Image (tube, rainbow, N blue to C red; front, top):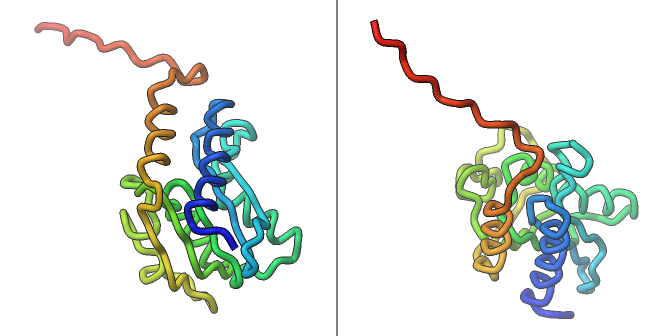
Length: 166
């Protein structure tokens, strides 16, 4: 079995792949109890025009298709899962999440909300381990690079009008 940094590097590769095609550069890998990578994902939100296609959801879909028990897996992701993804991971049975940088706007593992403790939805599974800051600077650099690029699909900004004097 490899160490945590090895798996986070694999997630960072997925994030870089996303960045290369203009997606928000979040990457994710999931390993089983033997240390084998059983799912890899990156964001597909822009590509599929579907705001739910985050890296974690892509991995969940792969695991479900392969009939892999999620409660025996560890998820590595370059950025803290958003509230939607944290709740989905909890409902699917992932009990261990290791992430890189924090998500100060949408984080569901402590930055904005701690889904583990505050979810209104009942689950037979609880996320019992959520570790942050593993190679967080590398994940943050990917995001900084993305947000410094121009978005060709962004709408034209509204021009400010001067107030008419009375």
